Image (cartoon, rainbow, N blue to C red; front, side, top):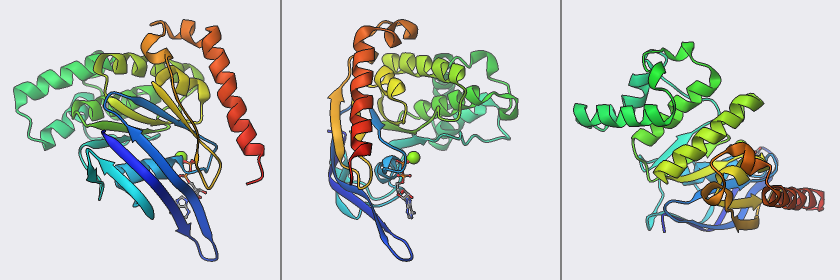
Length: 258
Ligand SMILES: Nc1ncnc2c1ncn2[C@@H]1O[C@H](COP(=O)(O)OP(=O)(O)O)[C@@H](O)[C@H]1O
Ligand SMILES: [Mg+2]
């Protein structure tokens, strides 16, 4: 098992109260899975990602990566946030090459790897551009290419397309789905967009409102078996049926008096 979370709880002490965020989360993720985490705003999705990233500790429970306790950030768990953090003094090529340089990957190999991920992310023509010359979608593509180039065990993505306009967002979803179909990287992806989750994931996990428990954990066929054309997938009856089911589940949980 690549990632193993068992009985993970997290709470915060504020000045006059304790906020219980995660309440005994059990979640195991295998190599090659694309797990989408859904849940209402403020339920603890980012908190869970930060625990896996090693940016925050769990107050209780077990958090393992390849059988070892996660005690801090590591190169094996790369994070892509909503706002891509690129180096503004470097062009696209050098941004993608940055992690490999840090890892002292030899120049010839580095060039091959950067070429591959620029191509996959549709950035080959943009290689010499500076980050301020890029649109929001292109910046996020650079961030994704940069992370994939270093070949982490798992890519952790926290609403990476949340700040993009609807059209760009759909393009990015198509792109990420194709990249995943090619690389089969393990991805842990947070979103509050049910369609996005179903379109990308091999597995969809839904959290309840705070204190969050797992409401449902389902395998999802559309990223692996679905048509290559995103438009076709999103409008298929099975897709719409599963979308409505999950939306119903989230609505029901929000209405419940916790
Ligand atoms: N450092 C912190 N101190 C106190 N409360 C926090 C802290 N970080 C997060 N929280 C609270 O934990 C809850 C879950 O936050 P978060 O994981 O960001 O939710 P989500 O990503 O699902 O929207 C929120 O109510 C938030 O206010
Ligand atoms: Mg969040």
